[in-house]
Length: 223
Image (cartoon, rainbow, N blue to C red; front, side):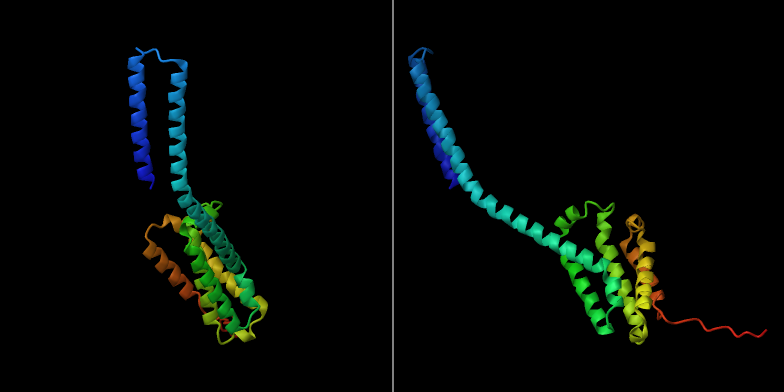
């Protein structure tokens, strides 16, 4: 539709220009002021008509796209906020829950992180405050894996652990992840081989997975 409109406008413009040129030659370059105003008004009308046609064709396409972008931005903001909040407070939440409910809370936080991850383009904007935003998803993922290891290694004694002991176990696990990443993710970013760095942190988490209440055997006093 827009193409045909431009074609017709171009033909009319050419015809008007020919008429103008013919009048100008006939008048030996001395067209009257009224005649010049007539052609100027015609050109203005053609310009306005073409502009209206272009806007009429473009606006219906732009508005839905802008509406979709705005909706996606809102959804991504909610997803990011929920993922960030659920993981920040997860050690405290796990410490206060029975084992089965703690597993569900961990699973729920994991799903929220994956949902936030699907908004990759928008997530970069939400993480403008982060020195190394590309490490944010990885850092939270490995925090979740470390907390999962805490639950698995303490499954049999979870009910006997106090809230403080559970919280300390969770904080120790996430502190281990921070050692690998650095406070702002700079250590993780500096390691370009993703496979190597993931193998390293997985090994550390696995090695730290003894029960939190497990204590070394006391030495006998032979004095």
